[in-house]
Every structure is written in structure tokens, then in C-alpha cells.
Image 1 (cartoon, rainbow, N blue to C red):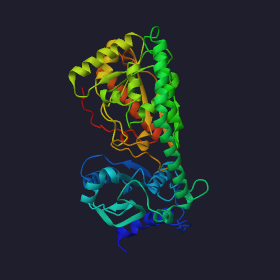
Image 2: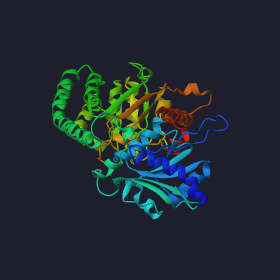
Image 3: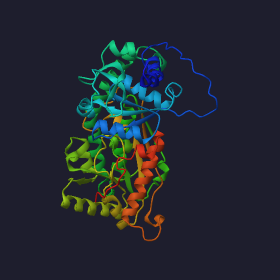
Image 4: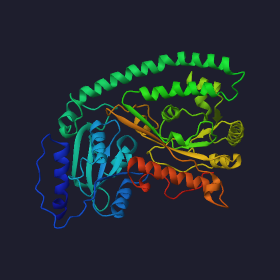
Amino acid sequence: MSPRRRRLAPLSLALAGTFACAEPASPSAPAPAAKVEPAKPRLVAAPEAGDVATIVREEAAREGGTLIVAVGAGWCEPCVAFHDAVKSGQLDQRLTGVRFLEFDIDRDRARLEAAGYKSRFIPLFAAPDAEGAPAASRSRAGSRARGRSSTSWPGWARWWPASLERGRGSPYGRGVLRIAAALLFGLYFIFSQPLWFAGALVITAVTAPFDRRRALLHRYTCLWGGHYALLMPGWDVRVRGREHIAPGGVYVLCSNHQSHVDTLVLFTLFRHFKWVAKTSVFRVPFIGWNMTLNRYVGLRRGDAASIAAMLRTCRENLDAGSSVFMFPEGTRSRDGRIHGFKHGAFSLAVEAGVPVVPIVIDGTSAALPKSSWRIGLDRARLPITVQVLPPVALPDLGPGADATDLRAEVRARMLAGLAAVRDVTVAEVDGEPAARDLS
């Protein structure tokens, strides 16, 4: 046996034993000479662009240990099971010191195939060679990598690890129940909107003469939008740190942006604010029309005049006692990491003399990824976290600080917050390691 095969043999046994058969063989391991804390397996998200072989070589050179290229998808139940098992520590003993460089088959298919990482089935685990190409040793499971968001039966059922079963019944049966529940919820989502909008019209007509800020209508809208997030089958929405947004306080609220459903989830804050959103969203039936009733702020991206008008309107809202809510990244993240921030939210906070409240949201990218309408039904429970961090005011940063310093501080705190939520390093959630000015 070659030295490379001898080195990969323990990993192959661990993957095969855990994710290929119900009763894995127990490899014998010699007792360590000294008590040393073993390195836990880690998941590393691959960059969303760039040559795969180059990315693999750079990651392999970054630190020691064994590097494995893992190819999966959010809709692939075995892929999600493996990801969750690593995150929860179930594989700490079997895969000590292994780093998994994760690629998404839907996003990265072309560049993966160009680098030689090609398979009809996912998840795919491949040990790279010195050039970043896949070595001969690889492990594949049974969800087809081609086609739409369904997994084949009984292919992946034979592969499904018994050690990861939750509850009774087959994963196939539970998946059918989740799909049925989501379809019923979808019907409710569609047909309930006219009724909720009718209620918004009534509230507007009754309160408009004395509620200039539309505060009562916004509370109703929080109930409308937030209850969808709380009722969606499988979603487990948790809001932490809500006390950092004082009732009656005026802030610029800033959150990272992962998905279309972020707005529904963030309504569960149940705090008064004015959304800043693309003008196209205001044309969406019922929900968009309700945004107009609430006097939320519209914006045409890339239009300087629209941006200037948006900032003026936001300043008027702040002066009137209404907080404003902005996504400083300007668009949704494709990889779930936090990317560069635009300058507008922080210049606005400095000019208005109000603090910025950083908010970290995580989990919505799995619920509804960017550029996709594939709802995440691949797991029984999808945790979605909203973490509100303490407000950041310009005077807190010391004399001479400006909007650029405020932007950098808020982004640093949000990176640390997202890393804490995921229990990873800050570098793994930083989409702009060499920060550039996005003014």
C-alpha cells in the first residue's frame, strides 16, 4: 500500500462506517502516549467564485491536518445530515483533525467539473492531490446530483446512517410529511394575504388622522409577516437580544442579508421601524401594497437620485421618531457570509446623531437561498437565529471617529456575532477579508 493510501485509510473507514452502513466496524486505535486534546473536524465554506483547484491548494497550505473536498447541496438530506453531524460533534472521534472544504453542487457544478470533481451522486468526499485535483480515493453517497431538488428512493435510503435517525419512521416518510405540511402552509400563505391586507386598509383608515408614523399599522404588519415565519413547518425562529432595541428608541437598524425570507423573520422583532427596500417589492400584491400603506422607504439600486431621495426620507423618519431598517450589504449573500458594507446607513446615523443597532440573522439562506425558490424542506428542524447586538454610537468610538469608523466597528461586531452563532472563526464568515470601500 502506498504511503498516501495508508494515510487516507482511517478517513475512508470513518466515512464508510458512519455514512454507509448501519453497524460500522470499530477500528482499533492504540492508546495515546500522552493526553492531548484531539482536533475536532471542521467545515470550511468554499468561496463562491474562483478556480477550484487553486482554492483547494490554498486551503491545504493554510494549516496542517487532512483536507477533504465535500460536495453537497442544501436540498440533499444526506448532505445536510453529515453537515449537522459534524457541527454537533457526533463525528469528533471518527474524523479527528479533518477539515471539509464544502462546495455547493448547484452553485459550483461547472467549476467543480472543470477541476475534476464530478460525480452522479452527492455527497461526494474527495481527498485532493498536490495540484488541487481529486485523488483516486473518494467516497460517494446516493442522492443524485442531477435533476431537481428531489432525492432518489431507495438509493439514499440504503445509505442513510442509522446513527443519525431522529424519531421513528423512515426519512422518506418524514420528508413526505414535511412537504405536505409545507404545501398546506403555502396555500394558507397565498389565500390569507387578501384578508390580512383588508385588515391593514381598515387600520389605516381609522388611525391615519392621529397616527402619522403608522406605528399601529406597523405593529399589525409585524404580526402579519412574523406569524408566517413562526408558523412555517420546520422553522425554529429564535430572537435573542431584543432588549437592545428599546421601545420608543430611535436607531438605524442594520442586518446581514441572506434570503428573501429575512424580512418575514425580522418582523418577529416586534419593534417600530421603517423598512428600506427595492421599489420593485412595493409592487408585489398585498404585501407590497401594505408596505406603501406603512410608508416604508423605496430605493432603486444604482440610481443616484433614488439613493439621495431615500436618505432624505430616512432622515425625516428618524427626526419624526421612527427607526429605519437597512441591509448595508445592499443585496443577499450567496454563501451566507457577511460581505462589504455600503456607506449610506452609517453616514445617515452620524448625520442624525442616532446609534446603529447591529443585527445578525442566520439560517434563512438554508430556508430559501438566493437566486432560488427552492424552500428548504430537507431537514425536520431548521434553526433560524436573530441575534440583536448592543447599539453602537459614534461617541463610543472615541474622538475623531467618523462614519467610516462606525461602519468598520459595526461590521466587526456582526462578524463576531455570526461566528459565535455558528461556533466558527471570524475568518470563516467574512466574505470580504480585504475590505474595500463600497461607498
